[in-house]
Amino acid sequence: MVDANFIAKPDAAVKTRLEAELEAKRALDAVYDSTERDILLTEGDLTRYKSRLSDRRAEHTRFVKAQPKIDFSATGPVPPPTWNQDPRKKREQRKQSITRQPVVPPIPPHLLVILNLYVDPMTSPTRIMRDWADEAIAEVWRHCYAQGQFKGIYGAYKFHLRRTTKTTGEERVLTDEDRENCLGIIEHTSSAAYKASSIGWNVASKRTEMANKHMMYLIVRTSDGSFYPFARNNLYTDIIAFVSFMIEYDDAPNQHRQVVYIYEVHVAENYRAKGLGRWLMFVVEAMAQSVSINKTMLTVFRSNKGAIKAYEMMGYKKDQATPPDRVVRGRIIQGDYMIMSKTWLSKTGEIKM
Image (cartoon, rainbow, N blue to C red):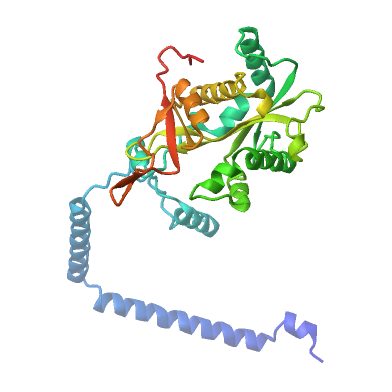
């Protein structure tokens, strides 16, 4: 076993021998240093070394001055030197330099129009749903009723503006029951015209069209739900009229302009020719004007002479987007339908009903 006293207090002879070896090493180092100074670093060599060092410094200064100046105003502030920084700060700066994204200039509006990417926030369906509450539509009805715009329509009615899909903060969504009831009304009033045309009647296709996420519905229904105008056709609903419409883009050469396209306008037989259909069209046009749209469009079958005459009385005309007539064996064959449109100027901010 090793004695602790031996480790703490070495033998005197060993200590004397170690001190003698240390003194001998110091003497040798002194001799070596003296010899090296006399041989390698003479006075002339030291002068030449200083001169060479000065030349290299001057050359480096000229090289730095000859470099082109960099404008750091476009790339941001110059980062501080990192050679004397903490390694953690170096890693953080490296991450920031990697994640830094270049500044992309905004695309000009005219280029957005060409690319069909421009969407005017004033023409969003959300704006229409926000500004046209059900009570506001009912107020328009009461005003027109007081002006004597309706003939033979009495009683109280409810008005619902609904969208097919739910958006953020929007609870006014068309129910599946109302959608099916509207589909039943279309089938009752227009299926014969569809079957007589080259388009044909397809329930699945019409249901898909009605379920478009941008489609909006303005529904008029009885206030107590007790009167069913379509009951004799096995369609038990309190809806007496509705109009469906959607914001779209116009056809060429005005494909950058937004329009309100009216898809369906249907009124129960007992309420026709009394001003209800005309009032629905007027409200849709007012909604279009409220979001800075000055054109409405619709599609009508050529066989529906009564509807064409009514639309012409409202100011609608044949649109240039209507498919052209065909010439077969010298005979002119018209298409099954035509597209009608109405454009107005909003200088006074009013629409004449």
